[in-house]
Length: 410
Image (spheres, helix red, strand yellow):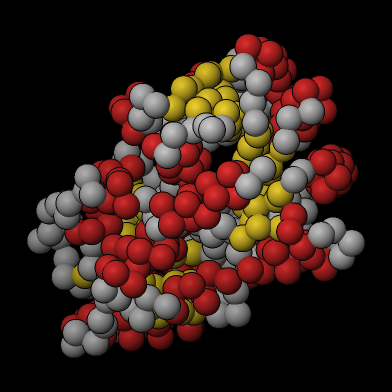
């Protein structure tokens, strides 16, 4: 018998954001393709700072989408770009809690749901899931993805208390809690040793083969310079700070101009161009590094396929997280310059590509060495990509099948 699934996801088409949106898209699509009745409860697009209506074409007609009232406190409730702090608890989209709760309750009263799935990184989604579970008794699964509470996150003491409260509700009420990396599972098992091991489920991120099938390499950066590196997606100032990369490139210009003159580094859709533009100017690397606007997802894949190499940035504070970008880079089958902690989960994954140079994000000397080695290896055809039949295990479809089997057991 088909399952009725209420999938709560703030990040859903038409939002134009990092590839994390495609986790919910791939899971909901797979469930619907396999005979389940899926309703995605998401936000009014007015809550999104960036969206592209074309992205709605990615959602199959078999997935019902309900857009609940939601606004962004920073944009809609601010005066001269300032707003009260309580309007951003637990996040700037707290208004979505009210809109989505009543929309979700209406959905459940009209048609009983077999399971509620709420998905991070917007904490409001889990509050909505908790309230609907508490009122209706519907089984609740949280796709937590990454740890909510970490040593340095969130920074606000008030938000830390709220996140701690949400986490306790997840532990008490969720049938399953899904995480994306082995390190995150180990962290929570240590934090909550009395919780049954069956609660914790490991469903890593991945790439979406259906979207890759629509993509093809283009000529975007041909004939500009010999070697083009692309970073596609948001660059968070704390967790993906490119400062030491910029320092390394500046040193490369001075010490190895014959290599620097061949490089073109594209930071696509950083989300923080206003912060990085003065840094690029300060280090005098405007001739090498360019900030480019966001592309829709298929266009972004096209660009990655046309690049000579791909750039990944991740601080050691995120060792328990593995971004979807890492899986997409492996699927692209191009060399990877991974600026991340060699002991983290992301590095463990990237090493499996057999095409990566790894250096700490905060060590400009090691980054410089890795860039030089990357260029040498590209010039001398030292890299050999994994065959596609070995890459398929990194796909979202592979993880969606595991998730679907978990739901069928409810």
